[in-house]
Length: 584
Image (cartoon, rainbow, N blue to C red; front, side, top):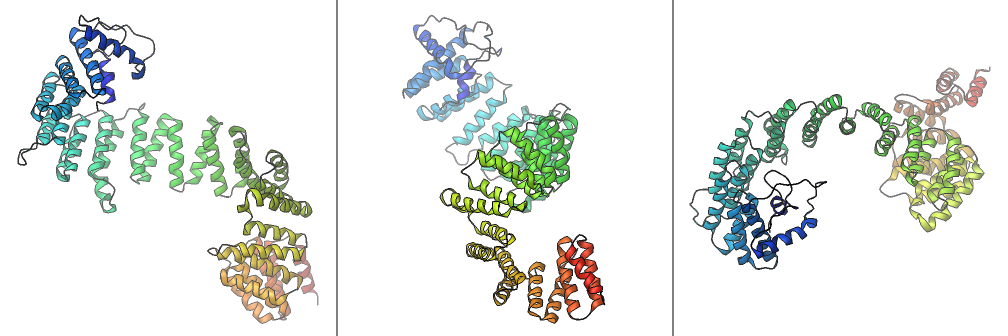
């Protein structure tokens, strides 16, 4: 089938102006019919270039070519191939410099006349257009597709391409054609020689080096890791020349080179090239690519800084805003993430996902009041969405409004059973149990914890360990169900060994049972696991202090009380215990 661009070519004059409105009237009635058909086909060809530009009259030869071409197309569509071929050959006679028409006609000649007739036609195209490398490419492709019957005949395609490369040594398309021909025949060394010739050319056009660089990637592909060094040695120089020759306005060249380095996993060099493009051109595209490169290199502070700059210039860019929110959240910088999440809702129209993200960020940043205010809005906007009911429960819980929170947990469970049962997982019931425990409704909390344990995925035992520890420690603090407490806490340590939190619970279980030597042994093991004590570790040091006190070592007890208070200076209970220990 003829290439779509052929029709477009026939509608153009050599001057490049459209030849659609000044078709010459031909004396032959058949020709006039054909031209009329072309005029009616103009809309389908979509040849409009805006306002109509008057075109000079076509020559008689061009008119004849058009007429025969139109007739051939009609006949080919009707399946009358031999008659169509006659008109294609006549069209080539009147326009022998059209390589696309010649290539299609040659394909038909092979089927309906002979291979020799097709070769002769393509050779005539070369004679008619001696400065058109495309004519040589057509003939080479033909020889590659329709090989001679003599297996010992010379490779005509190679011969044609060698002649073309000697005549057009700075044409990138010829190198691509030659390389692909050799690679198809598994002649990689010959393909490499072709690229060596391409690399020697004194060409100042960066596009030439981009194109030949892409061809070189076919010769030295990255499909095998052991070829990585060879690939870089052979291919990189082509792209580096393109980069060196690119004038300042040619940002497209710099970005194409950066893309090559990115896809070949040369991230550092890709970043350097993109930084240069961003510095020289200051385009949004270059800086967006640079953001992603910084992420790949774990240079997240640089990515955040650049995104902040971009958003000052394009504040409505939803993609960049969302990316910045994600980066801040990943770095647990929730305070900086919140204003961007709020702006995202304004810019993107306020999707459920964006509201949900903002609510999570507000809770994580400790902005409980704002989280609760947001939940009032989201409950009004999405009244049947249980995820927002759950988020509202978390907001109320963070404000220690446990009764309101517990009502919302119940509502969430009711809504989710019919619309989103997947959110009623172990995490949901753990959160519900924690809230019940805070409300001192311990028996109900135990039921939710047990429900959470039952729902924990078998492949993630650490999730169950959290709830087992919470359940055991809750009863331990109440000094109830001590045997069950030990079972729960021991199981948590089995599922997640060497966890300081669970080991501390185990030590405290021994303490409550009155086994102070064993408790101290466990607590001191926990202390060794703490690399950099933080505020949450004050409880561990408090437990060690209380154990030493029960063992009669007041000096060590006071030392550990001091360590606990350095971590949590506002803890009144620890202060009180220290004061009691200091009394005679």
